[in-house]
Length: 111
Image (cartoon, rainbow, N blue to C red; front, side, top):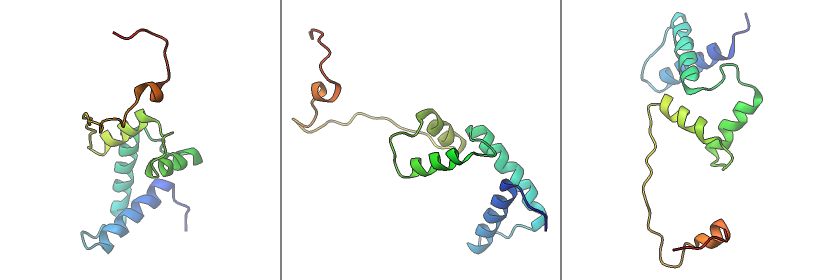
């Protein structure tokens, strides 16, 4: 049996997941097309097709909510998934937010 590249292995896993979930059965000869689609998705998202171990770590860190995840890559990944990000103001409770403590003293006059 020939060794398959990572995208073909992932395509087979996706096909198995669809079949196991009762959604669809993907014929073995169609997994090549699925691998091509996965390649396109990763390219659009800016995710390396043959990721080094760092990329897996980045994804794991993102899933864990680590603050070191690169924001631009997060936005590109969301875009590739067809998702967006909303930002809205949240009023903190009185006394909860001290910008001087959060940002440190700048030494500039306020007015």
